[in-house]
Image (tube, rainbow, N blue to C red; front, side, top):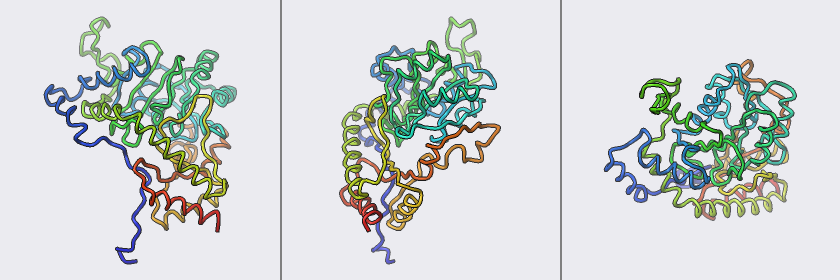
Length: 384
């Protein structure tokens, strides 16, 4: 085909990063203060903003370099047994499992709910009846929020700590007036982008403070701790958020409500059009009792069967439309996570998603032509 006749590639995602001129005033503040990292003024300002959003004092909030390190350090800060088993969904991004393994624990993979695609307290209780579980790490799948009251009750009844991997759920996942621990991602592709970064929110006494210390190598900076300032309290790592990333996040916060509304409107429009184009043969993720998704960043459809998913994938590739099999292969199908590092429980719903789910193009500046290209692919598959 002649180069001029080639159809432009329709991307899967386009990060929604603030314009350089929007960030510049914050970067000028960094230059003026000569403070670039190590819990600088902008990081402190950002943590205060998060504290206000969650109606908590600053001691319950800490930033980290990324959410994966946040999960790892939260697990370390919980002081679990050396042979601890951490329950995670089989259907999730690999970072959920790698955080467990890098913290020195064993992952136990469980099923997800057929409608919400998430690990629920009911599934966790069933897993606890099968094997020993020392902590649970549910995932806010594709940003869908969990019912914190249900998880608070689970933690109270079982004594097992729960850490919500809320990587994609900023603005959707709240504590809902309950006790709990949340870890958010501020990655470039998330609803509140800082390019890189994460934030830990926890009502568990002292947890956020321990994570903060661990993110600074484990160095003691508390004069009342009984150790010299600068002495190593425990073995941590360098997981501090930089002032540059905090600057980007502060600008993103200023625009969050508007951008979240636009994301919801785009998702509603695309689901309606794709439902029509597919003669209503698609299945979409449903909200649970935790509330609705307020700032979608992905568009994932479940096809009627594996054959149709594969054919749609092939058709999109021919039309230069990018797709992705999100969270696939399942964690249980990855050689790097095979036993003894991982214990796999039955996961029929996750296996179904593994065979039928496909991620479609979804980004804020999608124009009518790009939307119509996706819609036509579905019309061709289902109506011809």
